[in-house]
Amino acid sequence: MNYLWTEDTGAGLHFWKLVNEFFFGNKFIVESKKSNQGILEAVSKVKPEDGNIYYIAFDYVVDNQDIRNKYRLLRLYADKSDKHIVILDMICFEHLILAFDKLIVWTGTGKTDKIKMREEIISAIDNHRVDISKIEDKKTLQYLMGFKKYSTERVMKSLVGELTENEKWSVKGENMGECWYKNCCISEHLGNIRCGQPEIKAGNERIKLLINSDAVQKVLEGVYT
Image 1 (spheres, rainbow, N blue to C red):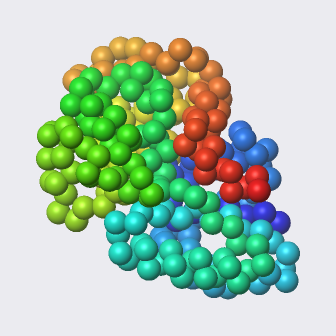
Image 2: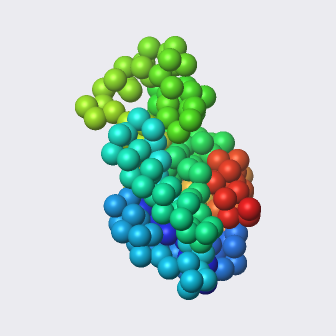
């Protein structure tokens, strides 16, 4: 059996289920272990002799010491598993959304300051972190310095939340907003929230485009090899 284990719940877990359905033809059993500690506890019980392969979607940023420590332990389990535990190379689910080139057009967000910050932050990503030394925009630097407990993952969760404020595109609930994967195309204004006009009408084609984006495909390379 092939398993895909994620620490994500809610929209993140839903995303991996959509990847399984639309890209892999449901070849995986997708399960949430609810946290990075849950992932560690699950992989510690893996028995290679069972013949199962476990692909691990583990949020990894190098500017969070606790995550770095847990990742080292995860690597030890993987190295001892005779290739039955495969760690996918990813930062976090929110990074996959933030890096998507259609994000701004599709959501229709009018937050020009956050759009600029997104560009700065995406271009400054290096080795699983936002390299602050590469950012020159003052507003972006102020935004980053405003986090009491700064980490690349926290920044991306916050920024994605603001850029997908419309519930139809939100990635903060139990599921991804329905316009990511359903035949839902909205153009009206909802109060102060602007709505985008995706050029692709069919929801299943929109989610496929997200899955085939560079950031997501880089993560999925770990499944192909």
